[in-house]
Image 1: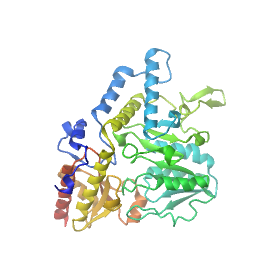
Image 2: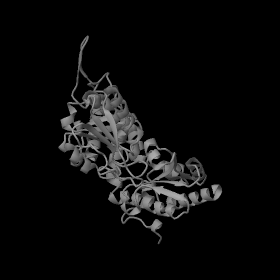
Image 3: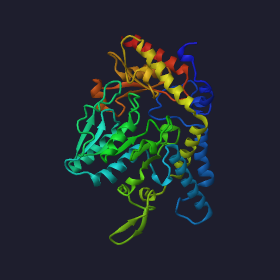
Amino acid sequence: MSSSRRTEAGFDAERLKALFPLLSRTEPGLHYLDNAATSHKPDAVIDAVSDCYRRHYSPVHRGLYQLAERASEHYEKARGAVADLIGAGAPECLIFTRGTTESINLVALGWARRNLAPGDQVWVTAMEHHSNYLPWQAVCRESGARLRVIECDAAGDLDLAGADGVFDQRTRLIALGHVSNVLGAVNPVQAIVERARESGIAVLVDGAQAAGHMPVDVAGLGCDFYAFSAHKMYGPSGIGALYVAADRAAELEPMLLGGGMVEEVGETESTWLPGPAKFEAGSPNLAGAAGFSAAVDFVHEHLPDSAARHAVRLAGVAAEGLRAINKVTCYGPPVETRRAGIVSFNVDGVHPHDVAQVAAEHGVAVRAGHHCCQPLMRRLGVPATVRASFAPYNTADDVDALIEAIRDAKRIFL
């Protein structure tokens, strides 16, 4: 049996795929390899959202009647489930947001804006998604702080030794992704946090590509902030979360102001409720929270460690197959050290959009572009890449279809 046909012991990808209606029933011939952008939703999540509207929907934390109280209970139960997924401990450490982007902006506007001064430093890595780059550009420009970059190579290894001053007294924040959405590299977050804490430096982790796909323990990591989204981990779109360490909570101010987050509104001054209500202005996304909670339950029930290993192994097999094709360049960690299901590559002399179009004609859904990582593209010396990203519901057939599509693209254009 070829390496592309091996499966992880005790894990059945085909059986898992059957739980996702779009992949198994609506689009059965689709080879969906754009999971780093968004994942598909199992019946359990879809049913949870529908069931919320059918049976539990009512204003959250607003009414005293039974339906409203039941809705509030479901909302807070969801908070507890999501907090438990990342080892947050106390549910009140977890704020519901619209997604990773809003979570990071909340820290930028509600914490960094108040704590940065001229001469301070904020560090990001060269591989950051724009959502973990642009907010820091803005608050540094506004405060007079300096935004600095930890460089990385094409394999995704960070050059911490070359980041002069990253852990010195001028640094107030380090913001980095747990997993690169382009390279698939898993950053040494815990080691960075340990060094940062020695100097009182706050650390924000963009966990969009990690939560739900690999073990995450924010208490063990020791980070100050951890941001992630439901739609990346089989949940609904439009909801995400921000973990805030207890010793940072008092330093964070709300980004949005409105109903539901106030203790008392006076004529000229107002006071806020304690967190997390303090940060959740407006009507809470009850159905989104229900779907988020269902996605967490789905991960616990159907995605053992072997499921994550399966996705990583498929990515490794794909990388090996792509590297075997002449004039194909792959980026990211070597196969033997790969720990995330993401492979980015280019066919030399062919625009990534053309490659992706040929792949689409083969029924293979890949992403082509800069992946909201233009600073990284410049360091790679390319305007864009093709990205194939794998989930546990992918199979060896998806890898084979990808390799065949890339061979065909090369034949057509070269």
